[in-house]
Amino acid sequence: MDNMREIENLTKIVKEDPTNFQARRELTIALMDKGYNEEAIKQLNYLTSVFPEDARLHYNLGIAWDKLKNFTQAQKAYTAALNYEPEEPDFLYNMGYVCLEKNETDKAIHYFKKVLEHDSEDANTYFNLGVCYRNKNDSNSAINYFKKALSINNKDILASFYLACELQKTGQEIEAQEQYSHVIKNCPDYSWAYFNLASMAYKENQYEKTIEYLQKTIELNPKDIDAYKIYARILYKLNRIIEAENIIQQALQQNPYCGDLYYLFAKISEKNGDISNYILNLKESIKNYDTLTIPIKMIKTELKKATEQLN
Image (cartoon, rainbow, N blue to C red; front, top):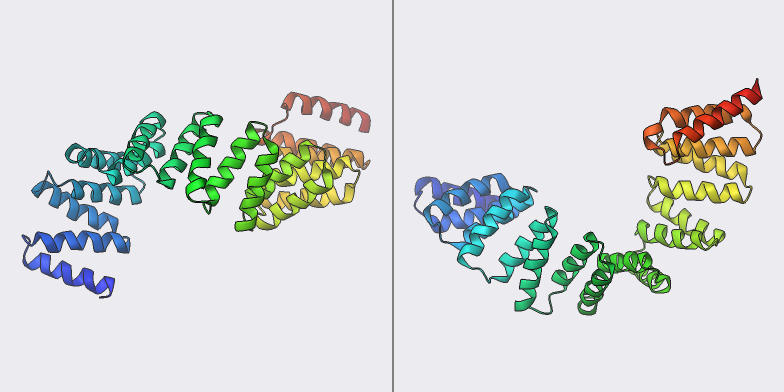
């Protein structure tokens, strides 16, 4: 039966007989499947008032709130479900997920580890534990959990990417590169993998390789301002001034309020001997001070010297 027709029929049944609780239960599921979570919540609130000890109703209520990104209400509903069935893996997993979304990391770890007591081969739970420890800046634990997730499901691209990030963070760059390459092989449009490969190549002064990765990053994600910044800095170092100017202009089309971009443009103009544009872009960088990573005091000193020289 078409989902909308099912909703209409079930709604009619419930309206005619409010005590037809089976129809009302089916209606909540149909509503949630169609994305009508607010309506589902109304029905579930009614059902939980009639059947307060029905753990599955509380669980479904939690899912509906979860879908609306109201994690506080979802957590309350999952807590109620766990009060009646404290060892149900689905309830434990969803509670862990909500705690993770609320940045209650230690609580999330507790619930996810409880899930593993029931199912030691749950790849999603290992992945989420990896995220928890990543949030706690415990890279070694995060790496172990991401590896475990991938040993069960090697097609989990996000687990591969996060593993690569943690490996990169801990200086295990060869393994990190292997993971990023794995991500790209299986998901060729994953721009962040290209960007992180570019960052590692840039650190090693492998400029041509960096440029190759950055071009791919920008192709896939034209709004990645950090990619433009690194690209412009490399071209500046290589004395490819016109190309550097073009890259900055492309970046400014994406974000005309980035102080760092104007400062880079200023330095490129200075190297090109264009003092007027050098001063103009220094002023623009100061105007957009809230997006600067360079000390504004240093830029003001630079502007003062440039203005004095021009005069």
